[in-house]
Length: 231
Length: 321
Image 1 (cartoon, rainbow over the protein chains, first blue to last red):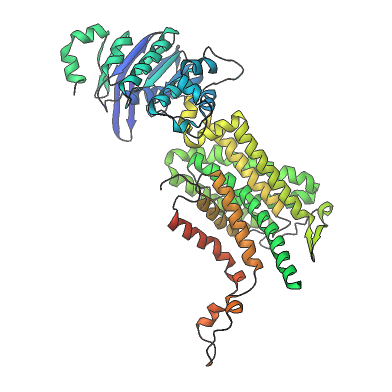
Image 2 (cartoon, rainbow over the protein chains, first blue to last red; image 1 turned 30 degrees about the vertical axis):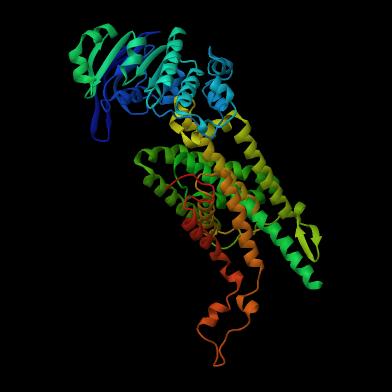
């Protein structure tokens, strides 16, 4: 479904991505791991068109490298950014409704389903989203992107800065998305969730992919973990 | 008794004029502030769109009458605004805010020169339409012109319409979201570029509309943009850059303050009595005898300085810098 080949990206003069290759098949859950600053977030930003990409990015067979992000989103690629960019002055309900791309063609995720799934969001449906806690904001941005009915959702560091109990809830939500048949590209630093739900893992280092395999393969490979993941 | 009536008359008339001027300022500042918070660009040409509105209104009135001009001129200015955004600002955007700022700055000069090339530098004869050229009512001894009531009504209708569109429609929601997180709005599948273009167009059209209706009441002249522009910046900085409610309050405050300052034609000297020493007028007596009307043009800038000292983000702004 998503094929990235030899992807390069720059911030000014610094060469951040130095030839990234990765694939996500339809309905597959894939994690992108690595330490801070190795280019994981830049990879998803380049796929989404927020950072200008060089190389080939195919989504459903169509080359999307260099397209404006709204067109990429309309092809069915969802993106939940690292900073949980909620619209703070709009209500929770309005935030969710803005996730809908085309009001004439409702997708498989309905507003009411989201509110039923998260009683916390339902209780605050009509308050400005700016007052939500970090965990609630994470649920809200993820649900908002789901409202656009993506076939693949890229979620950047969903558990960053969250308490362990909330991390558990985020993990449950991601599992639910996967069960609904939506492919997931999860960017994470913590191993726990990624090991539990992913079918395959990529580890990045210095702007390229340095390991690719299943969670079991990574468990057995202490050298890779030590060199590229552990602090 | 006669004196009390005169004071009351002054208060009522000045309040009406002040609110009117304030609403006119809001037609301009609302667009300017929304464009600023969305794109991060202070549009120096915004007052020029107001001037274009006045001159288009004048010219179209001559050709096809006031009412068609009242509709067409703002649309024309809006279309020019969209072209400026689509082919000017969007292309300069990648070179940073300074390039965009310079573009709007240059545009303001270009528009002023083009306007004076076509219509000359002296005021043109842009008149109140005959249909509205009568006193609406008389308070004490002042006839209040119907045209001013019309201006007020137009501004209020636009204000309410703007509020309804922003708060009640899906397009309004997208605009509100794009004010703070334009990238995210794009990631959700909305065409942010088009939203920018339309918002810029609507903002320009509102400025044009202000020009069309203010032209006959004020002076339609090629320097009208240059004289209004600075006040406009005072309004949006005073209200808080990017804040629509702030722009509304600031527009009314500046409108009222300026109108009252001009109307209160007393001087400090007339309040406190002459301070001249027996030996003849001193150097200070010039300052002492300045009338409030004479300092009226400075008052907005004084307010600006005070607000920047006391509350740097403006009345209702949220930005730290």
